Length: 209
Length: 209
DNA sequence: TAAATTTTGGAGTGAATATTCCAAAAAATA
DNA sequence: TATTTTTTGGAATATTCACTCCAAAATTTA
Image 1 (cartoon, chains in turn green, orange, blue, yellow):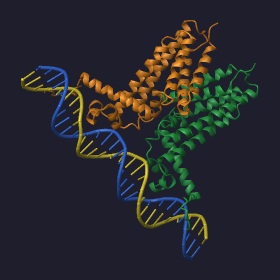
Image 2 (cartoon, chains in turn brown, cyan, purple, red; image 1 turned 135 degrees about the horizontal axis):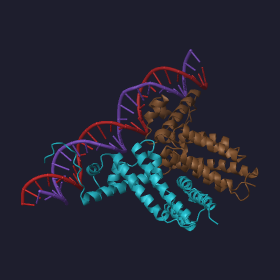
Image 3 (cartoon, rainbow over the protein chains, first blue to last red; image 1 turned 60 degrees about the horizontal axis):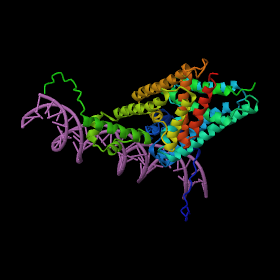
Image 4 (cartoon, protein in one colour; image 1 turned 45 degrees about the vertical axis):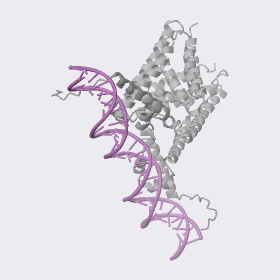
């Protein structure tokens, strides 16, 4: 084949290739969620995804590149599921439904693991600036979807005009993250419940009428 | 020397030994705070503390043991400084002084590093059960000192009897942890400010008179 | 069908890293 | 002072782990 300019051909992935690649990302995401990025070896991922070393490095230049994909994948997963609740916040009942959703996940997994994005954040921010950038975007997106939810409640007349949905959204996300960390450390759902309930109770003080 | 029962003599440390040991812990704590536990090698610690490998393993059986000491050290440091503010919460001004203290630390360090205990927690809970236990105790102690502070405000007549200082303390600690994480990720003090201010504003709703 | 491209197997490599070991220097104790 | 104990230096070891390499199988494209 003729390629005088030596332009790096971006080789297309076949359907089979796509599947293998996805399998690797999913396996890596699970392992890194359970035991952290540093402790997850390439060999671990190989075994879990049932692939060989050559496949690993065929699809990803290096471990760091795989980590980036894991971040994207977890962002999609986490924010995707949350958006189902957040895009429809028309009442305090809906807000509590979101809370229940979060709490129930923790109970189901015996309060292990914490937040898939939060734990990646804490492990990677200081040592991987690409990861920091990506995770920062993820949290902005998350914050944004909470903002939209609260603004919607405001527009629906559920909240009075004293409420600042932007501030409340950021405070709510912080409470969520801190609550999850404490719940993970204590292996007890109480912290995430109290953290969210307290913030929602505060939002209650802006309820109309 | 006579020791027929083969009882492991707990060898006492001389003053010089104590100093070396402390130097190792402080060096390790700084490195692990900056780059995480996994990324901090024994050699890193050796270089920073200006000691040799034999010294390292003379004072600590293994890396894990050093990690435990780092957790204790950071617990002492963090909760110690916070207690100066928390044991004296006699007014909302005092509560805001505590907030300012926290925020100013973040600003000083350019929002890098997050919470010394929170980051250890996130990295270690799932992979080191000794660490999990120790960190859990640390957070209970921290929570407790916030509780005491708020109870004091209640007894001082600053808060009315509707306030539940125990719940508020846990929610406050969660907001603090989540706020610090988001501030660290975003390199921006806004999240920790909003998180704490929102919680304090909520506590304000229990203000007497 | 023939040629090119993609996917896969699996052994091999080199660097990083925790830990061990021997012996000497320094300090404490008798 | 003599002896025991503690502290230190630094080389050696052994293992883990990210990453490479060669070639074959499978698949796509011409």
